[in-house]
Length: 156
Length: 110
Image 1 (cartoon, each protein chain N blue to C red):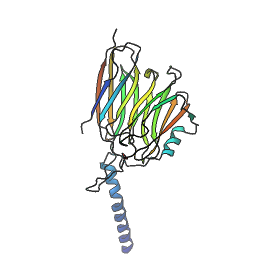
Image 2: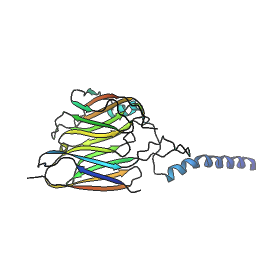
Image 3: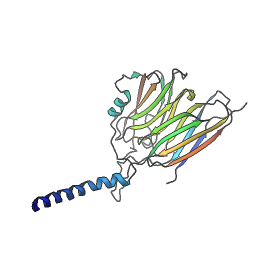
Image 4: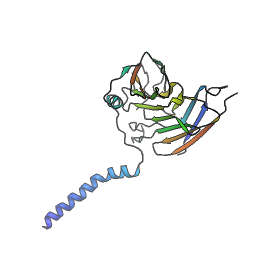
């Protein structure tokens, strides 16, 4: 009996010892864990089973094809879509395809926005596509993308 | 850490009913959590600007959820319709839940 309880005790201690760094990390630091966010996962999450329509005809993208520095790539998008109270673009999301974490920004619009427009700076680790997704209030999803050649990566 | 952000109106001489653009600049790191310090080898924890909300006269006109693929010191431009004189209030929240607020007066001409 004594030997058994001794073994149990050691196991318990060992488990606490193993868990401790995790508890410590989660307990003290408010910063989130560095989770990789693959592009396909983010895209599927956004589409949630629906199909994306080709938005290249209504979206005007103003993105440099070969920016000097991947740390700051200006993305400018204008969507030619009515912004009425019953028919408007409700969300614009900018994703990259080959970064470790690919979500750049999600912008929720209202009819008070007037036009569907967004300018944002994105960072890129390597040459890849920028994907712009737009959702209307009726659930229609538009997608457009552009390849961006990056000479000097902006991510670690 | 103090959050430094600002909001500006890009257009001038706008009237009621016009759609104008506002520009937000935040001085903030966007650490992905993947980068390492070259000297100590320690990983920088994920630390980024998380949420920006713009409110014009009490109504939300733009809501942004940023993530780590946004560049350091994010710059954002967004449109909104001027419904009358008032204040555009912008709230910033980062991943450590630090908050800041900036506002700019909207005074349409005529």
